[in-house]
Image (cartoon, rainbow, N blue to C red; front, side, top):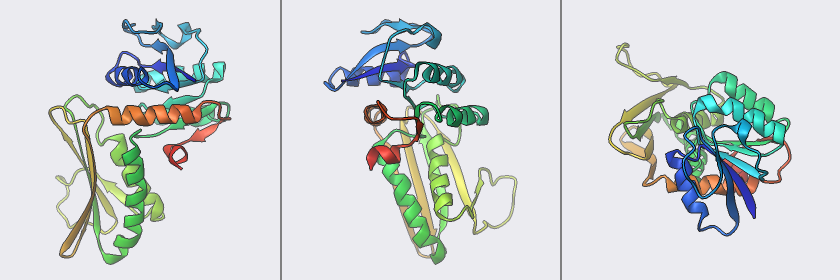
Length: 250
């Protein structure tokens, strides 16, 4: 049995995970942390400092400003933590990496199993198609309440391509101010916001007379919850280190 603290239990993802856990005999949420202290089937604390419930792992779906305190808590209590919150500042990202030297930390821009497979596929495609003069563009679509753009997942897809190609690409977010032809080493990044789109990501490889598109469309938030639970079960009991979904799925 994996005992979980749900950080951000009152948010949309926190509630989806809580519902999913109810039908999972291998794990249990023993406490939640949320400043709104919603009524849940487990004790909820307004802050990490107030939480005194022992656990095997923490799942974080909160806000970027709440992650620093969570990392301090995880280090102090020696509880592994799965950080699912995106749009972290450079300072918080550095703190996350430092924390991982003392407790197990798993960070992923997207917890979906499908997206993490797509990260591998786009890297492999770029290695084949770039030499055949294919251009690369990333298009992401999300609901109208999403604050950051491009999405963390879109950036992760571009970064996966760039890493596989020895960092030869630069990212272009806006072409409206520049009237010139596209460069070979561009990856165009495009963000669409509207309605209640859960999350769609297309990586377009456009060559002469042919186009290859690798896509992932999420129909519900449950796909992220499934991945987060899988990551939590994997991370519980692990030694200090910085982990990713690649290790979870290998």
